[in-house]
Length: 575
Image 1 (cartoon, rainbow, N blue to C red):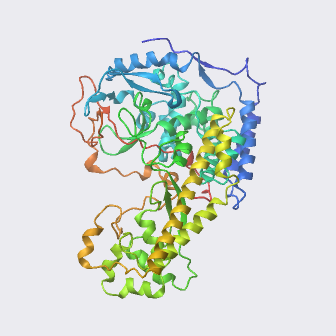
Image 2 (image 1 turned 90 degrees about the horizontal axis):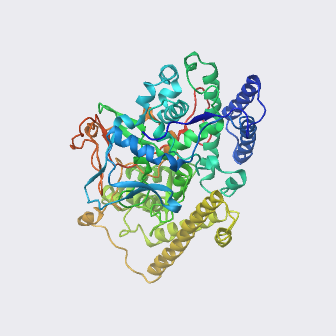
Image 3 (image 1 turned 180 degrees about the vertical axis):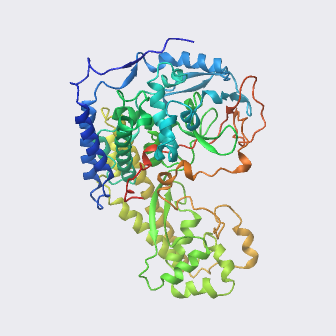
């Protein structure tokens, strides 16, 4: 089945530093764990903390140089071995090949016409690396005792991946050897490259990601070297920060949610070949979801140029000290909108959602207008109109809300250290590093969204001022107009509808223990990948002979292992 596995662990020789004593290394690890587990820094001090943590990590990395497991040969040399292994395992891979797509990197390329609805990739479950395969591996004894591994499936996958990479007889080596040697997630950015993200909305998540990864590494380093149930793990001599950073990034950029073999719940998995599909809105691609570019950069390591779902977060709330707070909070509650929440300004036109429009209308209401929506004629039904552009509260209210949005977006623009023009000039430099280019593109994209919001706010303000000045009658709400509110963008109230922008840390707070699968959609021992459509998890396609289960095309749910806390740690202040 192709070349023999060629695994090596460098402890000395080319590129290696003088041997460091176990005690010295453990002291550094303890210092790192303590630093990363201390109370969250006060606002404005996060960068200073990051520099301190990074300095400790760099000191550890220097002493660990040359100690990581590596493979002899380049990544592409092992693609043929991966395809041979997949065929031997029963995967269907006769209609595509692995190809280099320049800027997109390696991906799957069709070698014949593939019809819509045609099954083009069938991956047997035995090829998958999952939380379940981790529990049945050499990691099992430690998993059974460690609450962090039990609660955090993505971290379990990262440690599982490292254990199998260090095992010369691992059945997953044909897959592991084709994984990238490094990634473009912010964990790999140099300090000056991270500086480009200062003042962006991504910076807090980037700093938290680095801190959490360093904390997890220090925690598991101590566990691996001291826990009795870790004595048989092949990591004691080769568990460097670079190893863990690589494993975390591998999981973070490739992880998927799938049903377990018995269909009783959802688990996390690395899926060979499937994870070679790149992201876009097209066929033989994976659609990673409606992620902003900040999320793509942080969790996937790339900037998506044509991202129709890009957005900038904006935190808004009614002050509890405001005289009309109780009335505004009540109107918002009836619409199912929190009095304080994280919304978003979108790259599309208009830049605000129906939910944000409804919030801003209530935010800008006078006492008389609030009373009308609380106890006036048809007050309950009028709640439905809050998110609908056809029914302004008043011309004055529209003027105020668009003036507020214009002003708020303009103030956010002033927080950046550079202008959009300066960013565009920097991007023209041919010697700009890839990571710097990604960071500056993200920074510029945020500004362009805010600039569009300013422009839109100004145009809307002038439009409604003209309506007011010309005495244009306000559209009157009638109960018969309820039919106008049935479009998806304007349907309110939304009491039973989750606001997608409501929680700015939804990915940070997600853990395997919180995943509650829909029982109706988990009978999935049969899960094929089809071209052009994502089938339900309880699809009826039969397994091929000799295959117990396969994986199908679905939205790639990828969560960042570095956003989880280890046992006994305090929560970050950003949570």
